[in-house]
Length: 516
Image (tube, rainbow, N blue to C red):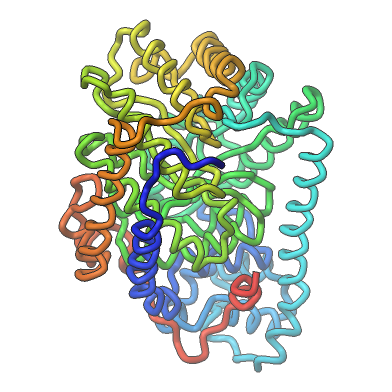
């Protein structure tokens, strides 16, 4: 990709070094701790599924039956193996027996390491084989049904009913959408469990469940084969069940998961320690499953000014990149985020948007950048919204974005109707085709508005990263350096679900995923 901004590559390298230092400071803690949600994701991989009569998922039942911090610190997998060795039950049977009160996993005789590995080995291999097979199947489908050229058009469905979502998702794909995001029900990220089975009622979206994933994946595969173009399925691996949803996504062959290292802390008030541990394990799952993550920097500009706070987006992208590398994600899996959110009344605002969009693209050339449409300054004037969305479409094509979230003319008025989505996708396709070669044809004036703005944003991000490297990321979050929202290290939801690993901690997937 031709560089057009003439940015200082030395400063870019220093930013990456500072971001590495920031994340390295937390990796010791991350690797020495586990969480309730990590342990639930492990037993899910080992085959525990379903829910009891009170609709409590069996992974929650089993992990809670361990009975305390000490047993959690030793790893749920070891106790599951102990139950299986002592009783002859399979993994699902062990969870159901615990749910009925027929046994306490922490009180059965302890098995030796060799016995544990013997009983869990086939389950571990089955889980990894299923994930690997899904990855290979996706590759075959993408060869048989080639995807569109970027920017890939990303549309949402959010009816609350998975079966109605299927109808709208297939309709959007047939209109030209390349990625379908099933929006989660409001506040699901704050549930410390994953609902079970297909769901037909949700608020502002549809519950993320494994069965809903399966239903939508099957429907989009059918559509992909019919239209001859592979359609990505997107959902959310965030919140208190981040690792579990990553596991569900890997098992059901989702293609993208929103999986940020700080979004839950900043926007959902989830405890920082819980989030940092959970994001590491969930991203290792995504690395193995070849799932593209989407990060959430675009949200910073909904609470902070897009002109003044542009550098916070870039700084966060650098940090998210380093956390992703620690989890073995490749750059081609890092859908780093940014947005088109400068006040449309600002003079030369489009040039400033162009500078910021191109800056992200040049700094992360191998990443499938996720570009968000304008929302903050959108009003009930659907005609102006559609016009601003078209400027966003132009900027996206000109700057070589990869994942393009389609702006809706009825944004903030109601959940999009099929007709709204049709007009928005049609406009984005028009820009993608009509302006296809524009980015290759233009150059920017040396020391002009665009180049100088890009350098300013980079310079400010460098300064911010230097400050964070000195005080630490936890202190930066406490000061509200991202999105103007303050989050203390020991505050937020889920802190009690974080424990230090015991010396004999056992997780049969950890070494496999670290080697991915």
